[in-house]
Length: 462
Image 1 (cartoon, rainbow, N blue to C red):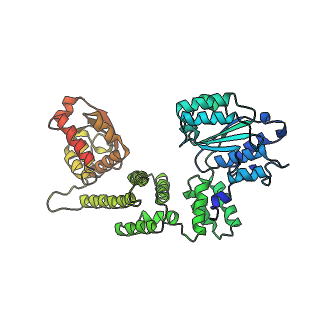
Image 2: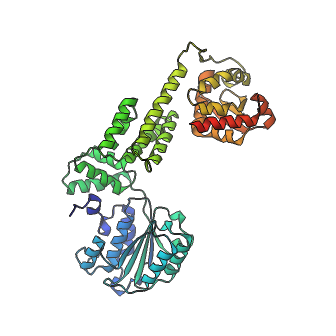
Image 3: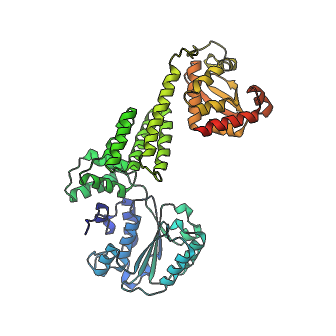
């Protein structure tokens, strides 16, 4: 028999063992002082456990099932046949259903037929329905009828990560217990207990790194701890910061090394994003935003990628290409004029710049934008500066398409930074407005429709 994974081995088996303090207190208060042998009527017949993944919802549902069925004096005793059967997932009267794969009306009809049958071994039948929000509308309505008039020998525990997707009528029939995202301290405490029981030497700093990387999931945290126990290293945790500073070849080699060692690359990307998020909040450096967005795209592609590490390798190569383009744009080239940073002009407006200054330097702005992102330069061809007070730059766009694209965070930052560099001002804030077709078409020197097509072609080339 294969050894049990640490997450299953240390799954909570009693109310005091539940990992979230708020849930321990909530369930403990509800379950205390109940005359359970007299009937389940003293407890709610339907529960809704809602919260993020990996925080113990189904574990708590099993504890509840044992509590109402335990044959021992202390509930649950975890020694009687029913407690042991529920722990092993072998009790016929505790039915666990995954609504993600059993979401239709036929499955719920079968459930309703089974509900009417008396328990085989236990006092009460317990139906634990995981990801219940995945049920179809028809199935949810069918379940509602059962929740409204359940037999006295039945209890339902509905678990979901997205309670807001459930019909309000279903929610109103349940006693709700909210499983909030655990604190860093709660995850560390769980890890310390598991490490202690396993006699695993892990310093407190490593436990904090694991807890942060788990992003609010007890399950993920224990899986990472198990990786350490099996002789692995926390590459996806400890190496994220170094990876973001590596050169292209070194970063590609590092990604390959992680893949060869079987490291979960999606977890590694999560840690990279968390590192950048912390830097962004600390420094307010908008240049980090594009990195975060690109990593998020790589993260999404990894799920269905033929080669798991390819999206991350593409991220590395694209970042290297952008860096080269930016450096090339700032270097003096023999084949064309160098764009120099202009000293502020003394004038009546804030910062010394008037709209005429922007218009006269607009070709330089366009030229400087292209190496950074040619799609943004294509969009700017169909706009016209119509206002500038030394800080706020107002661009008028002919089409809503151009306006929306330039208002995205990535495009906006590129324009603001470039205008700031060319005009020599510290801060530029881009404001977009939709203009009249004839004005902008003339300003761009041609047909507005042609400009839209050109811009779209440039954008979708990327």
